[in-house]
Length: 430
Image (tube, rainbow, N blue to C red; front, top):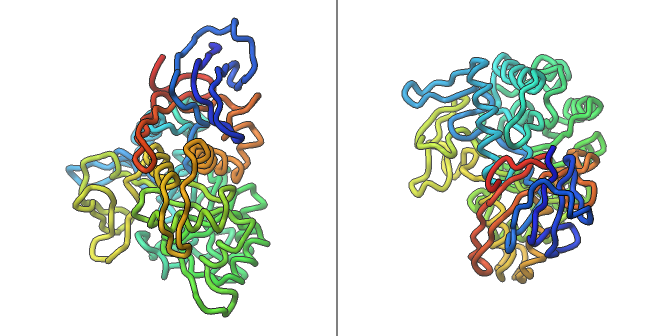
């Protein structure tokens, strides 16, 4: 493996931003290594070196949907053959690296068990057949749609919600490919028991598309619940009344334990609410995601997925459910754009909804915060930090992005210059 030096960049760590050289040797980061023994030097003067982005919540891109396979525009059908999945996984690995992503989880919608079993079998086969992923790593599966509240299904098909039992889960996948799972606490004891069961298998359990009470979420947290899936979206239930401690939104905002995902496209969540949630939860418990689907990155403007009809908005910025007012259908977002959006929101004074005003952060403080939310926090939640992922530090995993950031507060432009996975350049300058 080549030893690579990134020379002259602004390196973003958890402690701040420092102009320094870093070495990537044997898949690890060295901040004070032997500068003379490098096989390749890449000049990144004036660029920003950040930990690689990790997208915990992602369904598809560029006509490939993990739940269904490869979409054919002419027939408006999906090809779910092994070759279609092989193409899709390789394409995602290559494509997401262009957006600064070094690792991601692929998620499933509510779907018949046979479909789910098939797509997770394809993922297991791909990850265990010696396939060398060319770019970003596929880190495992996210089972999102099978154990949600049908009344809060949003763009998911409630007909495919399953009984909240261990048997239901094991009928989908029993080989360890699912790493994240959505189990809403709404149904009491069955929800808690399934949460405990999945936690015992090493699966990180979240909750989304939920109308649970605060008390139910607190009980689920004791059973192993770790995070809330796309908080305020899904939809997410809430209550201004004091009964049962409030609803899901109130429970998550009050919890010092639960992480909360935020879709950073500016449409799923009003940026003013993002700032409010950040202030209430703190930067250690927020995770930025895309929730992207197969139509993103394509020319598709109308489609059907999981029996639900979707369409691209007139301005091309987001997808929505047809004939269901104000219901968005996944997103058209990429992680680099999410990074830029959050950086811009944090560097300007902004009127909040629950707070009168949020003061701007200094540029470097905002950079550290955004890197934490898109890189460090998802790795801490999933345990990847124990393997050195999600940060720039001596001995950490050599997964980094090099960004060109120009502009001014509120109007920064972020371009991914290169992405490095395991110390190897998988996108950009060589």
